[in-house]
Structure formats: C-alpha cells, structure tokens
Amino acid sequence: MNKDARTGLEIAVIGMSGRFPGAKNIKEYWYNLKNGMESISFFSDEELEEYGINREQIQNPDYIKAKGFLEGIEYFDADFFQYSPKEAQYMNPQIRFFHECSWEALEDAGYDPLSYKGLIGLYAGSSFDHTWKLNPAFQDNKSIANRFHNELLTNKDFLCTRVSYKLNLRGPSYSVNTACSTSLAAVHIACRGLLTGECDMALAGGVSITIPKKNGYIYQEEMFLSPDGHCRAFDRDSKGTVEGNGVGIVVLKRLKEALNDGDYIYAVIKGTAVNNDGAQKVGFTAPSITELSRAIRSAHRMAQIKADSISYIETHGTGTPLGDLVEFEALKDAFGTDKRKFCAIGSVKTNIGHLDAAAGVAGFIKTVLALKNRTIPASLNFVNPNPKIDFDNSPFYVNTRTVDWKSEKNNPLRAGVNSFGLGGTNVHVVLEEAPVVNNTLLTRNCSLILLSAKTRKALEQITQNLAEYLKENTGVALADVAYTLQTGRRSFEYRKMFVCSNTDEATGLLADEGNRGVHSGIARAEHKNPVFMFPGQGSQYINMGLDL
Image: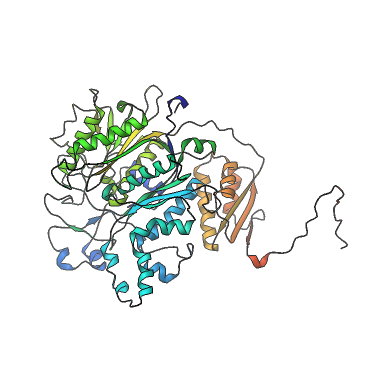
C-alpha cells in the first residue's frame, strides 16, 4: 500500500486466534481451507445416543445427523485463569473458550495485557444456548448468593466483561448481538473505537457453541437448513446450510501505530460499514437488496477505493435459494460496473457450516489468511449455478478450486467480507493485503531466549511449540523471536533460558533438555536470595567485598 493511497483510517490486523470444526487453531484452519476440506461431521446412531439424542428422533427420516462440531468443549484451563473447579463446571463453554482464545490472540499479536500501557478494548458476541441454561445443576441450588454467582458464569452477556476482568483489558468492553452478523459487527465497532481513540488496541470476534456437541437437526422444507448436511452456496441444488460451532478473535490496531511499533501485520482493514434493512422488505427475517447494496457501497466510500479494485468477496453465502440470490443482486448493484467475471466469490459455510454469532469472523479470518498467503481457497459443493443468478453478465464467478491470487499492475490485493444478520443488520468490511515493510534486520551474534509457564507440563509444551515454529520458519529473525518472548509474554513460575546464535542452534537446544546450555528453574518469591548492590563511584574493584 502506497502511503499516498492511505486515508488515515486504516486498521491493521496484528493477531488472530480461532477454533473451528476440524481445526484446533488458525494454522489448521488455513490448511483445511486451502486443501478444500469439508469439515462437517456426520454421526452414527450410537454417537448421537451417547450424547442424549433419543432413538425416536434419530430414526425420524427428516433428522439430519450432521454438524460442524468442536472437539474438547468440555475442557478448560481453569487454574490458568484462576477459576475454581466448581466455577469452571458451571461456566458456559462459550465463555471458557473465549478466555483461552483471547489470551492466544494477544500472544499471537505479541502483547501481554498486564504490561501493555495502552487501553485494550473487547468487542464480541455469543450465541444463546438454552440447553446450558436449563442444566438441572443450576436449578437445584437454593442459595440466592450461589444462584447469582452461577448466573454470572453462565450468562452469555457477561462474555466480554468477564474476559476483560481476567485479562486486565481496560478499554471498552461490549457484548454485541446482531444474530448471524454479530462477530463482523463487533469488528466494525472495534474499528470505530480505535478511530475515535476509545482504545489503543482492540480484540473483536465471536463464539458459538451449542450443547450437545454432537447432534443433528430436523429438516423442514423452505427453512434455512440443508436436507443432507451440505451447504451449496450459489448452486442450483442449494437448499440451506448446516449448523456449526466455532470461535474466532482478531487483534486490531491503528495502522500507523502498528507500523511504528513494528507489529506483524496480517492484513489491513480499509473500511467498514453497517446498516439495517428497516421495514422495506417482505418480512422481518427476509434480506433487502437495497440495504445490502448500500452497506457495501458505504464501506467502499470509507475505504476510498473503486469496486473494480476488489478481486474477491467472502460472501454470507448460506446456500439458501432466496438468500444467495438477494446477496448476489446486492453485490452486483453495489459494484455497478460493466466489467465481467473479474471478482471471485466464495463462502466458508461450505467448509464449516454456519457458526451463528461467530460466522462473520470465520469469514473474516479466512479472507485475511487468503490475503496473507495470496491464495484464494475453493468454495465447495458448487457444480451448477443457481439458474436465477446471472453470473455471465456480472462481475462475479464462484471460485471452485484453490488458486494463486495475483494482483494487476502491482496494485494491492483487495477483498470484501459480507455478513448479514437475521433481523436485518448488514455488515461489510473492505480488506487489503498488508503493506510491504522494509525493516532493517537487527544483527546480533547471540540472542537470549526466555520461556516461562505456570506448570512444568505447560513449559514442555511451549518448548515443543517454539521448536516446531522455528523448524517451519527457518528464515525468521532470531532477534525478533527473542524480543517477543521477552516483552510480549507474561513471566510465570516455571522458566527456561538459553543463548543461541541462529535458529538451527535454537532448535537443537530446545530438543535437548539435558544440554548444559539450557538453564531451567522455578521462580518463587520464597526462593529469592538477598543481593548486595554497591553503587558505582569509580573506586570499585573485583572481590572488594570478599572480606566483609
């Protein structure tokens, strides 16, 4: 991005974290996307019975035994966040996962919220899960104080403030709810918070986890769920989507400050816009071509870019005949060009299903990763176009295979992300690839590598994680790694340190626990020994205090 092309309103994406169907982290998510993997699970009758689905429902011919589910929703590192086992038991799984992913996102950005001097905001939303609220364990407690305490742990509306409390985030803390567009609306609000100076850094995203983790749904014709558990966005046979669980969080910062601070930048948000359909549509749940188009054009105006400079759109793409048609017509109207088939479109819902409150951020993270890797992943399950959609006389085509993403005339790659909420809240975000930064590499003969964790087992895990990272990123500047580990990580009790001169040496030391060059220890207050300090006046000499 040329400096002259900047508006001054750009926001940098400097950190990300997520857990999606078939992916425990962002790395696995991108692997699945670029390899065209559909991460929807189909369950056996025995699996469903194990999770409490009654046999009569399972044998219903309209019961679809499919879902984009998350592994491990029953686990939580309660001790790390200083919760008791009882509190962890009561806590809504969405809030549990959001704690962990918020911490991971900040670590990915290279910041410890306890030592960071600025204000960090948190903007996010979650899905309503009546199953968790109806847990008998919550109903049997007769103590008013205990019921109140449990409500604070289970109510999804305390999602952001609880995480802000535990992570020491002192900026705005908003719980957002615009149905399916919740998490992308959170990104929009976070950008406004940064631009108005309410915070210096912001976390934005969403989470949706429904209980039980393995279950299906009843298919009903003309509703929004698929008859076979597959989402076929923009296809002739599209009849709906499939539900999924997931969580995604991004860390945002004003671009100018991100560049000045030397942050790693995944991509740049050029503009965002949000509106509502109002009353000019056939019903409360129906989308509006006019207002969808207006939201897209508003984002283009804020970004100060031409529509034909965008070469990919991550659509809302639910795979419903009406929804796909309305979204396509809105995009066509917003672009307003006679150019044909220059902009690819796709939908991550064909990979992982509809993540409800986390749907928007799932598409956002996918698009950021596509820009970072200059690769457009395939949109799945598209064979023949919806006959009501005129692709031939439009700027768009469905991208059916993973392709290299090339820019024209050295212009930056740009993309748009759509997210539309039940009830009419529309959000559009314009993204651009990260600017090329010519950093002067800091050359040092040696670097000090510091690692710490709350437990010995955790220290072993982060040792392994760092070794794997260095193996996969052999060209990384070791001085940068050392700096981030020293300044962007919290110091915990169990520690390890060593000095090395290159990544190969670092990888070897990380793998060799018994090496004399690796020093490990436990830092506890009671283990601190007194140290005599002699202020310098120019008259000191070695061993001068030996006879004291």
